[in-house]
Every structure is written in structure tokens, then in C-alpha cells.
Figure 1 (spheres, rainbow, N blue to C red):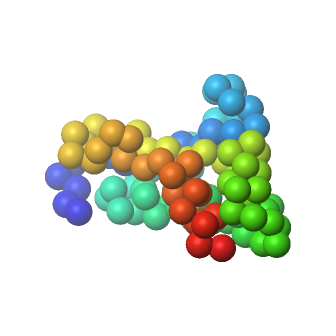
Figure 2 (figure 1 turned 60 degrees about the vertical axis):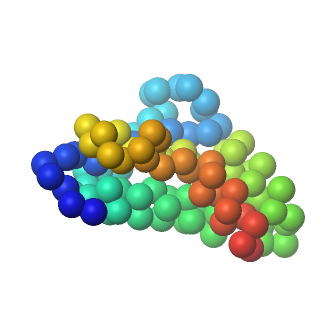
Figure 3 (figure 1 turned 135 degrees about the vertical axis):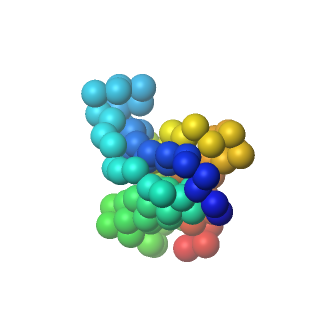
Length: 99
């Protein structure tokens, strides 16, 4: 996707500390929406790989993610990026069902 001067900033919340902005951190700024989405996906994938047992059901894996995992999101001034540009929960659900 073309940048056209837009900024794509990725922040990460902590599902365990829901709505606690002091637990939030900025992962980085990205030149493209695709780069920001890839960074968000990597955060979710790393948690699922490192913290969630593969022998659990998809529902158990997803519950572990939504209860304790990182929740990356994108802040951008690009109106064509969608709202929200990325849903970590939707992505995690898909990944949990993939196994």
C-alpha cells in the first residue's frame, strides 16, 4: 500500500491489565500499513508460540490469549486504513483455529 505521508504507529496493550494505559507501550512507527499489520501479527504469534500450549483446544488457546496476551493495535491518520486497521483478537482467533 502506498504511504502518501501517513503514519502507522503500533501500540501494545496488555489483556491481563484491561484498560490500564500504564501497561501500554509503543512498539514502533511503520512506513506502511502492511508493515504495521505484520508487526502486530508477529506480537500475537510470538505470544501464542511461547505462552500457549499447542495441546489445548482452539477455544482454550483463544481464552488464554484474550485473558493474558498482548493486544497490539494501530494508530494512524490514514482514513483508508479501516477502523480498526487491525484486530488482534480476530487475528488470534484465526491463528488459534489454525493450530
